[in-house]
Length: 149
Image 1 (cartoon, rainbow, N blue to C red):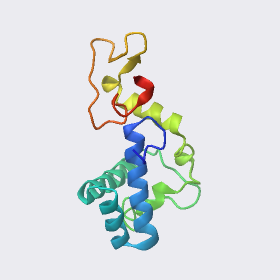
Image 2 (spheres, rainbow, N blue to C red):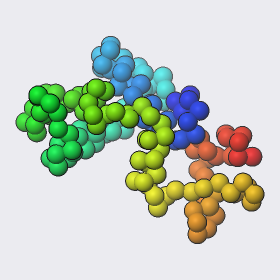
Image 3 (cartoon, rainbow, N blue to C red):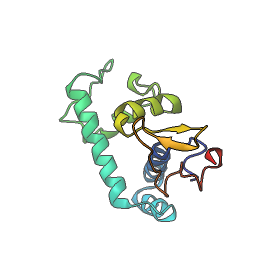
């Protein structure tokens, strides 16, 4: 819950958890990453898988020409050597990387079939077709989120 920082989003909480682990590794090395994961009950295997998926996605964006830079252009050949080029906050593709409303919008667009809304009058979650249940581990579960009670 501390990762959510009031964002009301499981996905943004996961992003914050990954970023914390990544920062720990970058600043203090692999052991610090393991320590961070252990202290926050995060799966090292899952974090490594996310890292690999991010690199794959960055490579795909590179292939379609989405990531073009002035000067040095990363290529598939040097992608692994310069794997963090896609995290450069000064790059145009990261202009909104810390903007929660933009990230939520992208996630909603990508996950559209799995989006639910809260009906305040009926006090229930629904997806436009039927009532839906929120998983008990979700930040939005009624036992954890008092705004929905």
